[in-house]
Image (cartoon, rainbow, N blue to C red; front, side, top):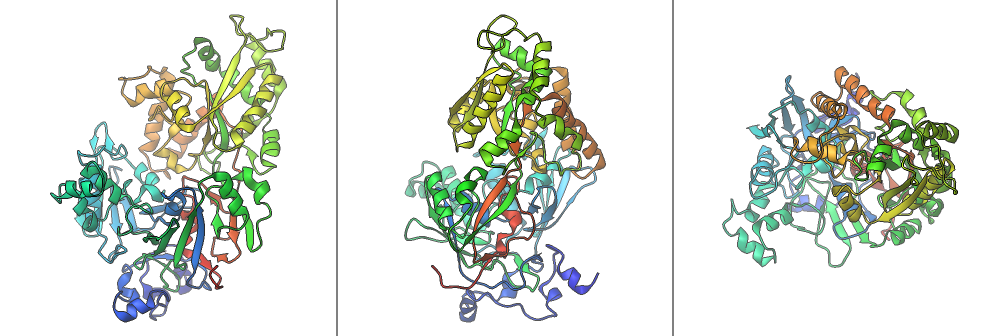
Length: 632
């Protein structure tokens, strides 16, 4: 491999001199006066010994400017995700994994420990060292502290994780059982970064807010109007915009105090990423977020050119409005990784005995799937910007069998009617609707949240499709909290939710694909409650479901890339493809990204957009840059 090829390997941990023939890298213009005055050390002293190299960054990029964004509240969900950096990070499909804050990692042969190596010389945004002690502090002061709820991802029925600090740059996570899925979890920056979700907290700053380290912590809490030192600690440990602008961070832009309601971020002078020329990232100096509380107004603002980037609060259903953005802006389409935007889950544990019997029939579930005209949904609701798709993981997984797709998106109302007739549901009332074996009309209800317009539009088309085969259904919209409450109380019949956990992140957060959380398992809540509580709650599942849950656990206990894991996953998700516990409609939709023409540096080629990958992280926002022009 040539010297230049080596320099362009993405995120290869290289000393700065390796790609610059020994020349000192260019100083960030915004920071140069601070370096000259002695307020900041020079670049070489601010970077880790082996910074993370973003080789795809544009060699012609220039420093400076303010990125203008929109957000919907002062907690700045979008702006926080934009600037996060995690120990590891997923590629755009949420399948490939590479180091970021971490320099490297190693699983033990028995898969019961994970050794993590940090970057020597890495510093917090205030210049203090970032070391293994900050991970130990997260564990001892928060995640494993009796004053706080234990994090279920690090506590198991067989015992809690153990943390071993090997040296200043090396920590070892030791588990009571094989746990390679921690890597799958850490692929999303939100779950592997500086903050309450762990596993990093700035010890040097946060000790003052914790009663174990500061006896005055309770008094500090009272002074801030909080009722406990725990609330005080969680407030300052949370890295969100607006909570504590003095809090140091590892992210590319850090919060700064704002004199008004605008959310303001400024570059982190100690950020660990560089481009192939050794120039420190990010290129953009500042980010400003304007709060627009109503989604409809925010979409209109994006269409009118009110931001340099907006993709977080808009969706495929907004494309008619966004198709012709304001002057100086352009529309770029990414592809969502949601395989089904409107997934209908058959509650196999339904309280109503008649519905439970119907939903328990494989051919009934298959018939309702065959009755749905997905092409019509894609065309009428999304104007062709979504695709018929099953409610399964992404087809790019090595375990995905292409033969699964066609039967799960097939539209054949005649075959659907034949299946229903064969089940003995061939008697109809005067209106043409099918009757139950007990003579009552079959009446189904889809429960869904009212956020956005698309759920209602899709649901009404499904109701029409089912009417064609003689099944009466209605749509019941509600708020997300109410829908979740019905789920907890097992009052849903056909709950609707998007199939969004489709990358390898599903191995650690399976939701409807697993049996760990009954509040997220829409088609088998009582069986899941029994399995998750070792029989203390819920209803004992059939042997086939118990075996399925055990198979998922065996898959979790293997590295994602292992051939045996691929085979297990193919068998596991093959069960979903054959049994229709939930039916997908359309997904993999076009995701609009409204960009100002001055914004440069997004990756070339096809883009993907998903919560699983932290939305922004694989798009490398530290490498974005702005064409020089007067600030607006």
